[in-house]
Length: 165
Image (cartoon, rainbow, N blue to C red; front, side):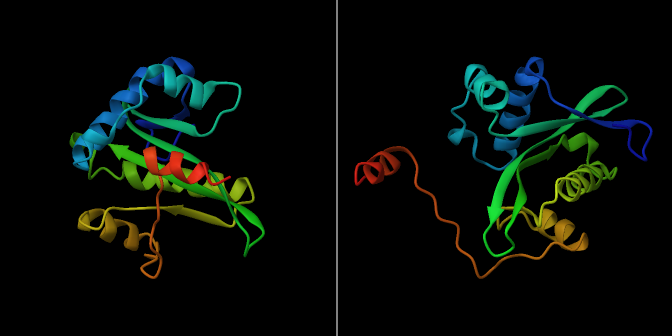
């Protein structure tokens, strides 16, 4: 999809992009100081994104035909609104391309996608230490949900919890 910046396009990712997506995920994890948490691989990404059940979607941002950003998103659901939501798991713009408005274009694309799909919300998380991102998101009208605490069960704790059923 062409954007208002003629040098920047956003396109849906394909199965052939899984190597590129993995590279973006690793770059993002390094930036977020979370590289030690990346355990995915090409096979897992291909199955999860392009298998019989696609659990998430990815779009690639290309500047002058070169991939420079990606966004991975999926749907959640708001019981209070009675509508689906669009949840942004990852948005990444290569460091040398920041400051050109590409992140804002990616977010605007996802906001339009949410509206087009009848979603009542567009949400994402941001690390507390990432002050520049927090200020950027606030400038776009995003409201931090400070009264909520994220909970996560993974690995052995997930296995242990499942055994109660």
